[in-house]
Length: 507
Image (cartoon, rainbow, N blue to C red; front, side):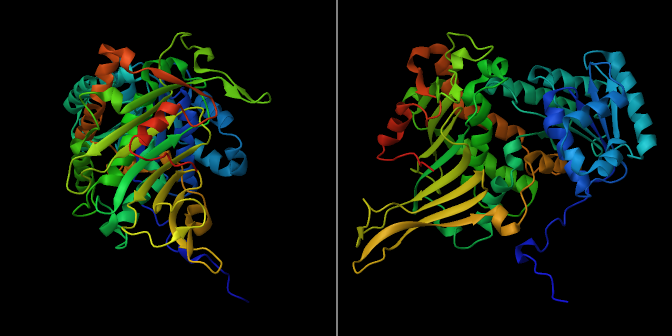
C-alpha cells in the first residue's frame, strides 16, 4: 500500500500542554461573551483533548437558572457546532454547572464557596480555580474585592483571576484598578485579557523576528522607514451603542489591541522565552513611546465618524442613526495616530496606527516599509519604483507578504513589484484556533505570557493621555470628521501621512 502523503509542515502540531484539573468560574455567564466565545473555546479545547476529565465550568450570574437550564441554553446557542459532535457535547456538558450569584451580596459568596467545594468533590478538580470576570467593567474592582473578601483568592498557587478589557477608562482609573486588584492577589494571579494576543499571527510576530536571522538585523531604523498598524472592520457598532458611546475607537481598539501589536512589533529580543522576560521588553517599548506631538496632540491624531453609505441593496446607516446613539454624538468610529519610540532601535521611525468601523475591507495587519535603495538604477515598468514592504496579516487570511522588485519581462532592464506570500491555512492545512482558545488555556495553565501586566496597561493609557485630556479641555481641536460608510475613512487621515510623503497601504 502506498504511503499516505502528509503535509510536512503539520509535523508536531497539536502537541499541546494539557490543562490540569480545575474549575473555571465564569461571572456574567448569562451574557453574550459566554455563549459566543468562552463556551465555544472550551468545547474546542475539549475536542482537542486538552481538557482533563477532572474539569468543570461553574457559570454564575444573577438569573435564577439551574444546571440544566444553563446546559440547555448553551446547547441552543452553540448550534451547529454541537451538531457535528453530539456525543462529545453530551460528555462535555456534564461538566457545566450554574449557581445564581450576585457578587455584591456577601451571603451569595458564602453559598458560592460551598458550591465550589461540592464541584471539587463531584469532578475531582482538586481546588484549582480560575475566576473569570465577564461582567461590566464597572464591577471589576468590586468583584475582585468580593472574591478576596470571601477568601477565594487566598491560595496563591491554585487560584487565578481573569479580567476582561477595558481595564480602566484612562490612566488614573487604570492605576486605581491596578491598586485594587493587586490588593486582592499577587500579580502572577491576575490575567488581564486582550483577545488580540490570542491570535496565532500576533504571536507569530515574535517567531518571525526572533527565530529567523534574516529579519532581525533589518528590523530597525537603519532599514525601516515607517510602520503602519491597521485594524479595519466592515461592520458598524451593531448592538454595542451604549458601550461605544462611552468609549469610541480610541479606547475600544487603539489603547489595547493596536498598542499591544505595536509592542510586539517594536520590542527588543528577550533574554529568554519566558513570560516576565517578554513582558519586560513590551513594557520598555510602551514606556519609550510617545505621540508625535504630545504638546499639540490634535496635529498627530485624526478622529472620524461614519456617515451613511453602501448600496441600494445594502444600505449603511450613519453612526448617529444607529439605535441607541445620540443624534448629536461626536464619538469617533475611526481614529488614526502617529507615534514615535525614543530608543536606539526606532529613533525617528514614525509608527502610524489606525482603526475604524464601516471601512472598505475587514483586515488587521502590520506593514513595515523599508528605506529606498540609495541609488535607483532601473526604471519602473509602471510608475515609480515601490518601496519594499513586509506585511504581517493578522486577519483574515492569516500569514505574511513580502513585496519586492524584480525584472519585468522583456528586453529592457525595468523593474516591477511582486509579492511573495505565506498563508497559515495553505501551509498547515488547518485553520488557526480562535484567540480565546489559546488565552483560556494559558490562563488555566497559569501562563501569563499573552496577558498584559499592570505596568503595560498603565504605560498604554499614559501614551494616549494627551489626546484624552485634549478631548475634555479643547474638544473643538479634535473634530470627528465625517466619512462615507464603506470607504477607508476621512480624507484628513490621508493628509496625516501625506505630510510625511507617505500613503496608507491599500490592500
